[in-house]
Length: 76
Image 1: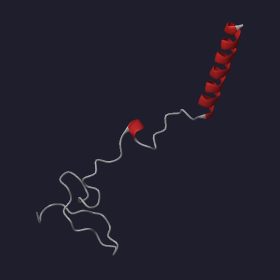
Image 2 (image 1 turned 180 degrees about the horizontal axis):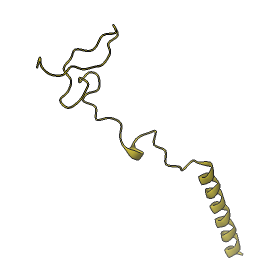
Image 3 (image 1 turned 180 degrees about the vertical axis):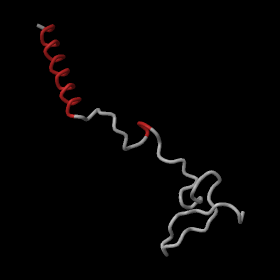
Image 4 (image 1 turned 120 degrees about the horizontal axis):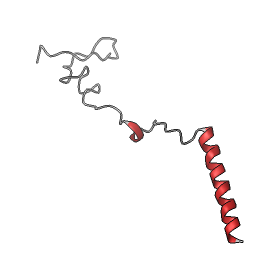
């Protein structure tokens, strides 16, 4: 246990955390060593897929207009 690598997180006092790091990680359990990280892809709340781009919004409006015109033309 004494020879285990130490966590490199900075403490409030300005020094380094002296807890042993999790095996295969750089941080201890307190400073995020157990965390697998943020989810990948769409599961991450900050994921950008291009749905709200200006071009995508214009295309959706165009498709909606075409469908409305087609629906009006077939009903009459």
